[in-house]
Length: 365
Length: 80
Image (tube, rainbow over all chains, first blue to last red; front, side):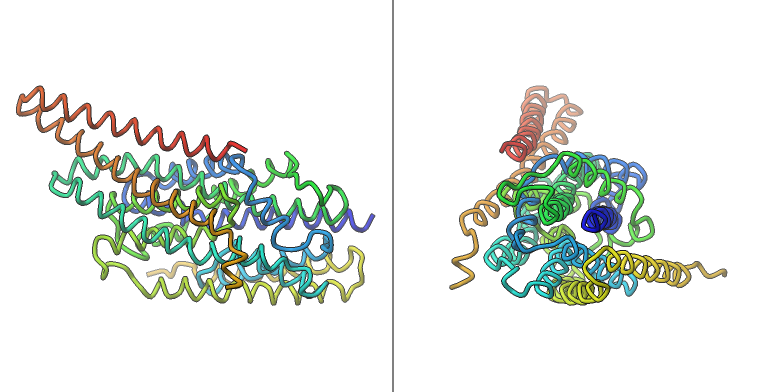
């Protein structure tokens, strides 16, 4: 009975994580279209959330990787998954509070690995899957997005560089309706599947599904798709204006190239089951589109922060996941630990929101 | 060496190749479509009908190619 209560807490926590993932990534997905004038903010966000929802139904290969190739499902319990999720959400909240760049995907995988190691030891971690399917693609994908966007914008300027700028800009803005849509579709595909993988892992750990045959239930797909779409629709309003021009100031051709590169890398990776940081891939594409025009146009400090975030996120989320598991088990093996940790977590999150909102409140002239 | 043995190099290389082909290819072909459409308008104003027809055809073909790549990508993604 108590394991079913923990399972329910895990599912709600996983969907909350999925919602915050969409909320956090809204700016990444739509900022390029908004900053180049290709779409109005409300239209771009509604369009992105719809395609986030649709993207979640495209494939289940990333869900399979997260659910069975990172940690050994046979030794995992719902409490381990819960602690991992709390590790990921805590790291996301901390980085959001202090305005640091982060990756929800790396935080999720780091959190689950950390809590699994704390509970069972290193034998719980499938190092081949972790290195081969998570870490190696995570390093390569942003670099590929950078190079693809750089080559794409060079090809674009060589093709249309001598034409009148007016029709060219209008053409690429129109193209951004499609490239922005594809990017939102790709984002929904890769990111929603991580939550599907985690919920399915919890169902296997609780004995509701067989570990031998990894199968994501339909209700898990629909709920994960809905959570990320709702998060995207309600998220990121205040940072959208700055996000599109934070790394470079873009023209429509650069926006098209960056979005096309990001969508191509994320969709191709999703097809082969590689869970990526969509934030890092999109940032790589934006920087590549900037560098393709002029190297000095890119704010390389932002690139440095992204690399630092990549290095720090996995171990930091793992440490919080491990500590959360220890705290949860301090209250025994029942549902009391997860319930108390959830209440503490909600309290800390509420305090963080209030303090952050107060800090960002506009000052009267 | 250990990393090389655990990484699914074949899938990773296919991912990189597909990313380059789709990302650079679609942008290049869409740029050709914009080139064709802009030149179609220019030639039309100059009353050069054959040149306008060729430029318009190039634009339409390029747009169709872009749409085909996107549809193909989604079909491949949804196939088991």
